[in-house]
Length: 207
Image 1: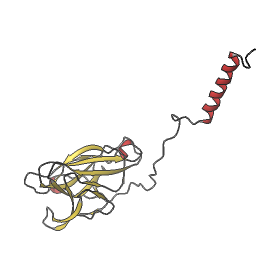
Image 2: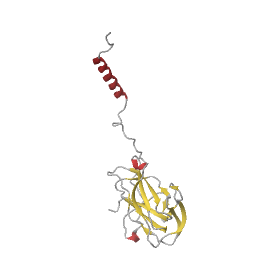
Image 3: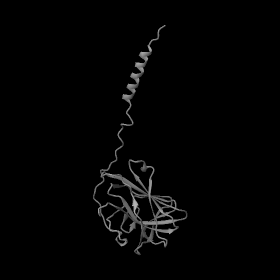
Image 4: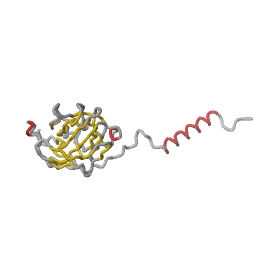
């Protein structure tokens, strides 16, 4: 008895099925990535020179959840033993700051940046211990959004006094397009404690 289909017919049928499936299934390689809504981003930023006393004349804009010389934490997510505390600042005034014991975390609200926002700086002091506050960046639409990337470490001086941090590298992508960024601050070391206020971002308007 002859076969219902010849081998040639079977080959043509298989090819037809493969083509039909291919046309019905979107290609992952050609699928458009999810777009990030940056409609809220503008180039307008209220700037000042908060670190002139440290011979830094760059212009900076304050991160959300703060006012000059005060950290109220609005919009921040505090984890572990991170908290907002009343403390004495470098100028002798008493107000609020972010307190970060070892292993605690603080996640900032999301802000808009582009390549013109290369760095940040903050006031920081080591209340106890001699380690660092570890700084991570998360950019929406990239793998760092779920797996923050460590870029910098900041710490106070050995006398437990307030200090201006070294520059914090934000590592924005190249180009003028807006990117949505949040920062993660983690208290390092063991049995250490850190305090932070006046966390500013540099929009590169001074250069």
